[in-house]
Length: 252
Ligand SMILES: Nc1ncnc2c1ncn2[C@@H]1O[C@H](COP(=O)(O)OP(=O)(O)OP(=O)(O)O)[C@@H](O)[C@H]1O
Ligand SMILES: [Mg+2]
Image (cartoon, rainbow, N blue to C red; front, side, top):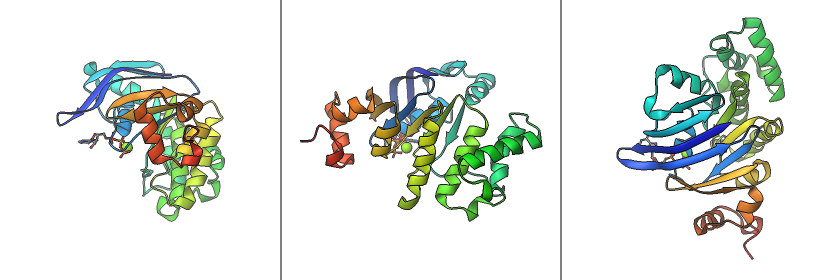
């Protein structure tokens, strides 16, 4: 579903992605973990060209682009393959919950208004927010707003959904409801790539974990393998610094 090769990106002369390669299969849930500044967001944002890398090829769904040959057409086509869930929700504040979900359906997906409303209502029901459909985002909790943004991402039936720290802007008591919603998605054969600091969640929900450090993918593997027998000393050190000792199998 995703294939990335030789991806490089710099900011002001500093390389933040160094020749990154990545593959994600259809229906897979992939969690990207790593220290702050390691390039996780830049990688995710590069996959839908919110950041434009200098070099590399990106294939998502049916569309493959070489980033040094971007045109407005192939950039648009690549973006159509995915949807993004942001840390700070990024809902339209002047639109209701329902309108936030129907907007892309009536604009880019060319659904009629009544078709769009029907799809949106189904999705809002799935994320437990049908009753709030006429409210404005400001009247919702952070967890509810994030669930609206997940419904909005699902609405366009993307090949893959990217999530960049979907729970890190939430009050601790609201994290659980959003993780639960994501866990439900993960069981529906939807391809998900999630940058997260929620290690227990990653361990439970992801099929594959990618550990990034200093602009490179240091290692990737199943949660079982990566959390119990990391290959790299860097991975081991990162896990020990972020997780409770008791959740790590290699800590005696
Ligand atoms: N728009 C930008 N302009 C300049 N430098 C940037 C920009 N965005 C990111 N960087 C730099 O690129 C590097 C990687 O940043 P990135 O946001 O991808 O890290 P991250 O792994 O997502 O970190 P965090 O866990 O803190 O979100 C950092 O050194 C950061 O300062
Ligand atoms: Mg980030």
